[in-house]
Image (cartoon, rainbow, N blue to C red):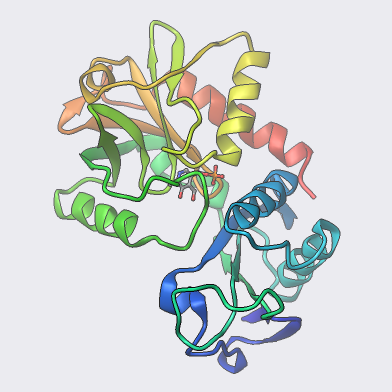
Length: 283
Ligand code: PLP
């Protein structure tokens, strides 16, 4: 696999990052994940804008223009022959002698991009069966709107879910669901789609923004507000969204089956609409 590191396209075995990189020492960095279908990037503009915002919140500049970033993404997709898959982009504050205080502003950032090939990404069989979800307390920091590389708690959550025979976890704070370990969470009751309102408590999903727009265009009712686990268990259906899973139905929450225990019609329809529409604007 060819990866991008600080201006160079190199085989992964030759790619190096300093042991003093602040991403490694302090999780002082942000990332993005953009999906690729039929060799083209979905929602690239949204991901690039969110990257800029995440960096700005941490007082870091964009490492290059959005156009240059697109070219790096495209070259990696081409060099690695990616038809369907993902492109990861990681930007850290760079390498500096270990110190909690930020290094001088002219310290070069570390910029890494790599691809993952996922043949048939849009035909994931999980979309036919739906996900089983368990809930757990949300113990992450309070700036979840910044897409940082601090992913240990979500990683622990995923392991806890698997240990209980589930596929993924939703996190709960103050009695209401924030989001999934790596996705935004939704329920549907009497035809109304409910998903947590934006704020510091959740990541502002790029797929979320697109799906809510498509739902409104299709005259579906949408409410952006918090919901409890009990309300979710009593819902007609549920689903999650993310760049890598698109729209993925949820069929069980903490052992309670939703509806008839199979993916619901609104989740299935939104998945189709999202895939169709985002392919049209893919670059
Ligand atoms: N929430 C969290 C915590 C995530 O990690 C992700 C994606 O990685 C999402 C939501 C979904 O965001 P997006 O649709 O931009 O992939």
